[in-house]
Length: 381
Ligand SMILES: Cc1cc2nc3c(=O)[nH]c(=O)nc-3n(C[C@H](O)[C@H](O)[C@H](O)COP(=O)(O)OP(=O)(O)OC[C@H]3O[C@@H](n4cnc5c(N)ncnc54)[C@H](O)[C@@H]3O)c2cc1C
Image (cartoon, rainbow, N blue to C red; front, top):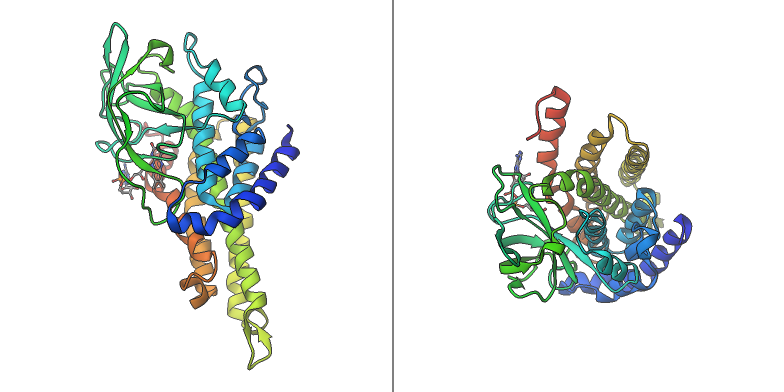
C-alpha cells in the first residue's frame, strides 16, 4: 500500500460502507463492526505499523488524509480509527521486553482493533494524571480503575490502559499497559448515549483487579507520561484535527447541495441563487475549511520534519480545529434552516459530532493553557 492507494481504499470504504449506514447508526447509537472489518480487510488498521510486523509503514500525511476521508462520511468511525491508530503506535513503541509482535501482526492482518483507556473519573480530562495505581506482585501487576470514556469500549480487542506506577511518587508517574478484551475484571460499565459521535461506543469501562503480565507492560514504570506526550499526543491531535476537517468538508458539501436544490418556487430561484446572505455564509464556511486543511498540512509537515515549533503546532492544531468545526457546522445549521433543524439533512449530525473534538482531552481550554504557558516560558506541568 502507498499514500494514494490508502486514500483510494478509504474513499471506497467511506462510500460503500460508511455513508449508507451513518444516519441509522447515529440514530441507534450503533457501533459499526462492518466498518472496522472493511478497514481491516484493506490493510488500513496497520497503516503506520512497521513492515516487519506486516504494516504499511506509512506516515502522518497518509494517516491524516485517511481520517479526513472517513470523517466526511461518518466521523464516529473516523474517531474509532484514530483512537486505534494512536493505540497501535503506542504498542509499536513498547519497551524492549514487552511481547507485542503477535498483537501488531494481528492488527496488520486486520483482525485486531485497539484503543486508548486513559481518562479516569477521578482526574476527568486531566488524562496525564491517573488516580488509579497499579499493584505489583510476583505474577505482574493488578489494575483497578474507573475509565470514564473509552472509544470502541467492548468492541476493541485490546486497551492501552494508564495507571500510576506501583512506586510512582508524583501525579504523572504513570505506566501504560496492554489489556486484552476478555481479561478477568475488565468490563464496560455503562451505555454510550452521547450528543454526537453516537456510533463509536465511547462508554465507561472498569478494571477490577485485572492481572497484567510483565510482558504486557508497554512502558517502563513511570514512563507512561512520556509515551503520552511523545507518541500519543501528536497522532491523536493530528487525527482529531483531521476528523474536524472531514466534518467541515461534509458540512460544506451538504450546504452546497441544499442551496442548489432547495427552491423558492414563487421566485423561480434556488436558495443559492436567491439569497446573497446564504452565499456569504457559505463562502465563510469554505474559507474556514480550506484554512483548516492548510493547518493540517502544516501540522503534518512539522511532524515529518520536526523542529522547534513542532510541539506548538501539535497543541495549536487541535485547539483550532475543534473551534473551526463547531463554527462551520453552526453556520451550516443556520444556512440550511428548518431543513437542517428538522434532521432532513446530515448537517445536524455533523453539528453534533463537531462538538466532541473540543471536549476530548486535551480539551480546547487545556490546550490554550499549554500554548500560552509555552509561549511565556512557564513549565506546562
Ligand atoms: C466522544 C468522546 C470519546 C472519548 N473517548 C475517549 C477514549 O477513547 N479514551 C479516553 O481516555 N478518553 C476518552 N474521552 C474522554 C475525553 O478525552 C475527556 O477526558 C472528557 O471528555 C473530559 O470530560 P470531563 O467532563 O471529565 O471534563 P472536565 O475535566 O470536567 O472539564 C470540564 C471543563 O473544564 C475545562 N478544564 C478542565 N481543566 C482545565 C484546565 N486545566 N484549564 C482550563 N480549563 C480546564 C474543560 O476544558 C471543560 O470545558 C472521550 C470523550 C468523548 C466526549
